[in-house]
Image (cartoon, rainbow, N blue to C red; front, side, top):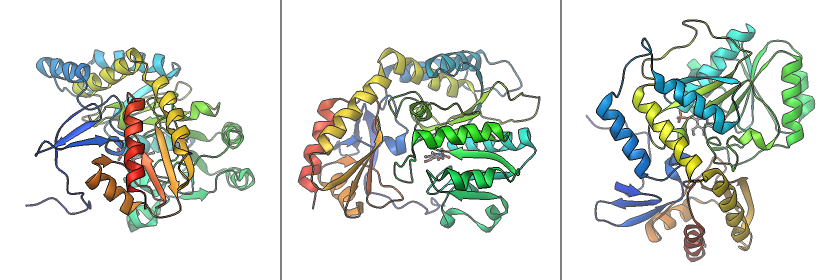
Length: 375
Ligand SMILES: Cc1ncc(COP(=O)(O)O)c(C=O)c1O
């Protein structure tokens, strides 16, 4: 047997990593400015994270959701405090797609309706309802077409209102800052009008914070830049710093009942320990403020490059838009400069998603390398 060949791979084989440094089997050092798709939030192999996971594994790694797990209660409390979302309940699962799947399902249970409104260039994952709400026909199979999803443009509140008044919508799902799509976000006024119309029409507002959450944007959640309060918030990626874990925060006006949602692995002891370690490091090391500061530093340096048409994003969820497609530049950065970066659906955008404890010296190193490799 061999792996199912769905990923085009760079010829790099990481075998160890520390902070933003990644080493291959020859000991060559790479700098990780992409965090493996925005996953590495507190740096590779952070000592507190490693120790907490080791300690947990020595005690108990897993038991199912049929028994009490005090770590889930500790995690919900800590997450509520750090995110400012104390009036939400937490349901844990295993990935970003699964988080959105559960969010959309809860919206449908709550409203008794089934149509979803999503936005152009959205990405919400690759499972059933999540992929149907993803604006990419190439990754939607015929079986996914049975979901009813309407894609709308950012900042067109008239079109939005025309759809929501029809009365068949269960959920509006948005990425406060689009990730895979290429770092676009609409105005705060647009988001606030959406939130107002959702409330007026009894529609569940879902903020997909899988990529922008856990401090990456310079606030705990990306939607907090826009002064809105979603009914459900989906989380994953940076939440586990590499441990596969996801979840949804459900506002307490939506009530739970036994059996409504469920999962075998979700919220297991090891996953909770990983997320608690991430939250503890974010808090102790002031990483949300650092993300905001480093984002400002990055932007100030980036605008000095005439080749950069636009700097996109917030905090350490960043994109550089060029007048050319960036695939070749990414290859040169990785093979010549040993620097990992990311691409986007918009092929002109280079995505930068480093760990939140990155320093100015690291960013200087990135820009020195970029200068050498720009065409
Ligand atoms: C905003 C957003 N939502 C959902 C997902 C899906 O997450 P996962 O790959 O963990 O299923 C992603 C992944 O890139 C994402 O960026």
